[in-house]
Length: 96
Image 1 (cartoon, one colour):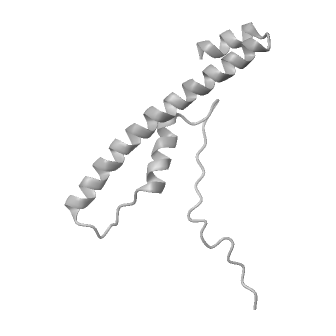
Image 2: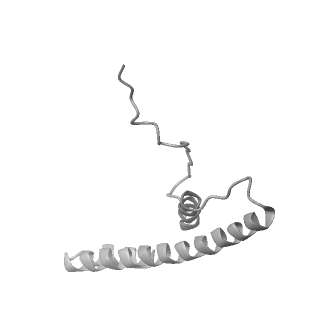
Image 3: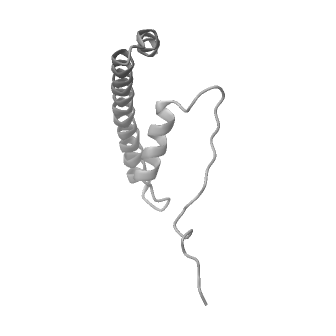
């Protein structure tokens, strides 16, 4: 008997929708932290509290670095547009 185990480790599938745009940085930071840090339901209450505080701190750090990455990427796109002669488009990107 051949068994297909390729989908065995997929985990839960979630769907999150938005209107007129992508998800904000805090959405992605929370998803990231939830994938990295887990709290056992069986853990003592004090440990659960400490892990929750840790997750909140890590989420803030991830948000900061994601914002910096977005700014850096926009600068790169802006510079590439200007080099290609699209100054008006570059100005629009700069205003975002």
